Image (cartoon, rainbow, N blue to C red; front, side, top):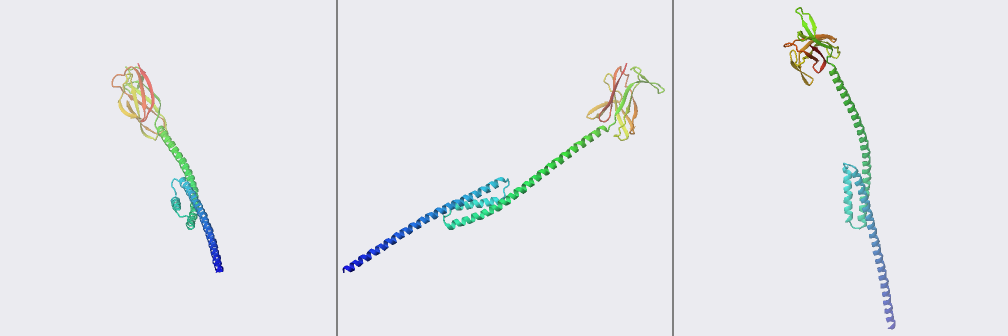
Length: 294
């Protein structure tokens, strides 16, 4: 009976020992699993943060490239939006190996896409730079051509004005004096106002090869000492002014010098004093002289 009791006591001790070993083993294994889980979670959190940092850096690169363009490339904008969407999704994702692996795959795909887009963008920048340089060169040449054309236009206008102004008849040798007219037609110069029958005005039309041949007109104005206009006293416009003239001197111009004499008769007696004689073409005063009747 004692042996049987001892045997039971020994078996109980063995069972308790086994249970203790199992308990300790289970505790050790559980502790090991817990520590491994903590390490895995810490690793996942660290890698998740790294992926988030990489995505954030990628987004900044897109921001720089997009900011350099006044008109952003639509492909760059859409790629930037995809990165932001992935970052927002990653923030609320579970910390699991499968989940993190999916995000890494998406990141690597976006990285490849970014490399392609940025390479294309660099090519576009170079092409745009070359185009801008070419356009600037074209604009410079166009501006130079415009300046040259404007210069020619100004020169042509100036030449045209010079020719227009030069293509008018001029007179030289203008002289005037009183004359006594005999019944025979003979003319005798006089300085006496009381004896003068007419005023004789003579001048030479100078040769001007710029003026075409044909019938021409000059306007003679004779003013006495009292400021009266002798003769017809009719009005014309010379340049921008109105001028009263005494007579119209008409002649046929044949591209050579031509001597002309005209007569002006008074409406009454000639006044004593200084007389002024002016000759006008259609644009300007071309000669002037004066004389005195006593």
